Length: 227
Image (cartoon, rainbow, N blue to C red; front, top):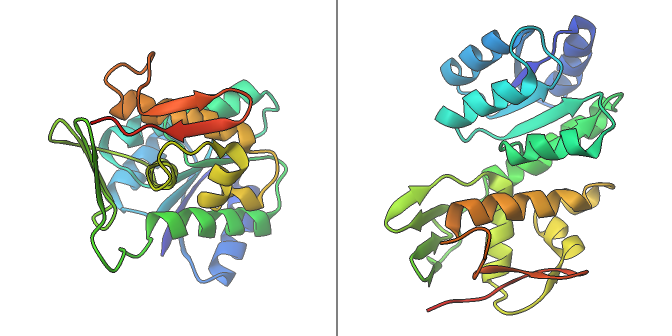
């Protein structure tokens, strides 16, 4: 599998490249935002590791541009400690984030977790869920709203899959994290809220008044099947 690493610090790129290559990945690199977008759309990497602080076009803008054309999984790197910055990245379509300084081993582990979700094997028998104008096809890893395909990130897909398989059951944030493989890492519980927010924008008739993905205050979320 091919990983695109985007960071303006060559020391970080080369150090991270070493760990990925030892883990069996092919690695390509970009050191600025414009090159990152070009390589992401030309080389078709399986995953992008994207630093937020880049010269010229910043990481947020790079993520936004990639998401216009591609659903490739993205892990953001950030030296910022503010939770808001991390959540903005997730709202733009990143699948995960990791804070600098980081362990290259942890980054490789998170990469494998995201790729497991992105490349999950189809289920033996076709499972198609329909609720309202939404059709959710597990085997095809496809979601349609009003007949139009809606692009879901691997994390969003697995969160929705877990919820629709447990209709009317309250699922805690911890349970939802475990359903996406992110539960093995600490400090990411708030990311569930952002992914749910993104899902609501994509599938709810009125995201500000959700009828499918309903909040269980203080606990988590539940899926309400509407006919």
